[in-house]
Image 1: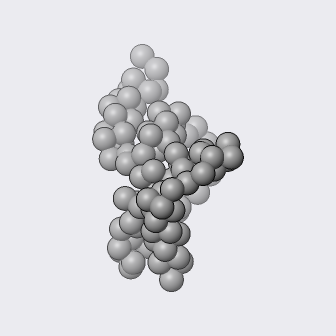
Image 2: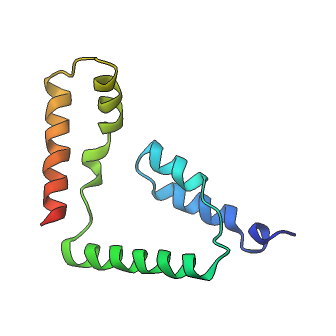
Length: 102
């Protein structure tokens, strides 16, 4: 039995994927593996604590505004044109990002 099996890591990954809002987030979660070095565990734990403090202070980030952003970026990168609906979604995403900085 390997360490992933002992930790039931795949179950944890599946649970995290249930909370992922975007396909890209799910892909990143699926690539995760257990940390094997203590300093990496400590650093990641500090990052998680910092993120929790931000959420407790400011509230949950408006992730719903990210829903179609990747698709819109792909279209624009390929030289495609975004319509009014896509531009409004983009502006909502930018406004959400600005709110997170405050």
